[in-house]
Length: 562
Image 1 (tube, one colour):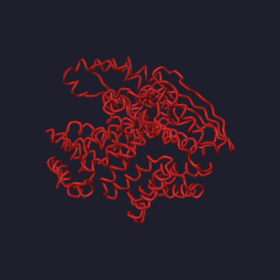
Image 2 (spheres, helix red, strand yellow):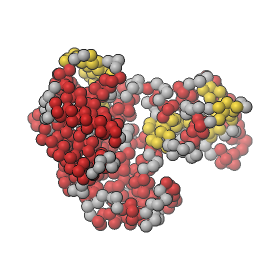
Image 3 (cartoon, helix red, strand yellow):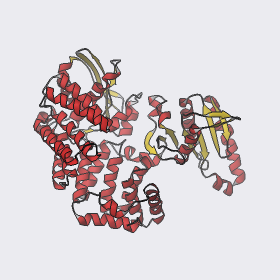
Image 4 (cartoon, one colour):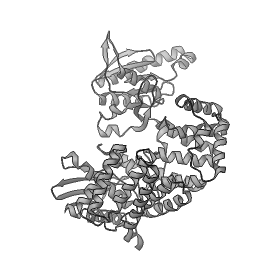
């Protein structure tokens, strides 16, 4: 653990005697007893900072939290604290090594009163303690060769998006990853797939607000405090459960909990044959919707619970293929194609398998994982049309079609298709994000803002993609202060995100905040010394050249090289 007093030189300059007395009190009344109480040892004291070694990561993290909580009311003395797990070398009553260096650099990016821990440290503590930390993304640290994934506690600038929103005026729900009780790690794909399917079905109900799987799956493997989860995701209801798969049978327990009162609204146990998995999903989601007293239109009743054809073996291959696609690499995409195609060989009417094949081909086209980009996009279009035609979930088919249209430069068609997607799946964050991107391309700035904000509401814990689209739309609406704030939230989580830095630089310049703009430009050119606005403009997606020129002018006015 590394800890450092914020503004030490300033404090000494203002009141040397008072600062020394406050530091002495800090050491004797807070630091020493907390470190000792958690089996720690101060191995280095630098006057305004300390390096502490612990027997376990849990001890270090708990100590750090208790220290910051103990200083919460102190207006003068604030600490930045970090925790890292790594190799160290003991020599002459001191410690050295990469572990020490990384801890020191992580401490530098902590906010006053905050704590930053490395990914390896977070994975070494129990789920309940880990849940107190939010994802800060990959951080480029001074003199550290590789970026370090970091998590933050008390980092107020990064958590406002998910905590400030009120509960909506309709039932809001988060489905947490079901627990695999089979004792077989190979069954994770099935259990995760079942959870995803429940989320997908519920997201098609217009009377519900359903949190994205991207946010809820961050809680996978953690000890769950339902009330805390509900507060973090700004929802009233939480679904949790477990799955035990054995032979051709599956046993599922599920419960719906009111996160504001910890009251169990509904609970059920299902013991079925695997061949009944589709009917089981439909039954479970119908009971959840009924328990929440959500009224469905006649059209929704047909669309939401349309039965998928085929036997369970097709679903198994589909679930494996979907899992491979989520791994997001050239190799995993190739494996996904094999699994998804096998599912379609068994069941040629499996709409979801067509949709995910389309997403695989779209990724292959976008990231150069295909020999021919245009052919990959055309294959994705064919799969989108098949997904819509087979329509067990037409929303994802329309979202895919809109994405293909977007990357083929058919922006108006992209808007039309993605609008269909959000109408069919009104709680699907991915559909809203694609809808925002398409609307930006055609210049529908207000529509894009609404779509991006909807995506943020549905996926509050992984907001970066939606925040970038929101910032782009805000820039064109000349809402420069909001644009800058949105872009900075992305930068704080993902420092290497170039689009966010470019927007932050342009927005700050438009606000007359030249120092902030120069900071962003300096960082852009440090990491991308050959950056030029003319080259950047070639990769921007606008239907109207006049919209592109507004964007380009903003970048040039900020001082980015032409």
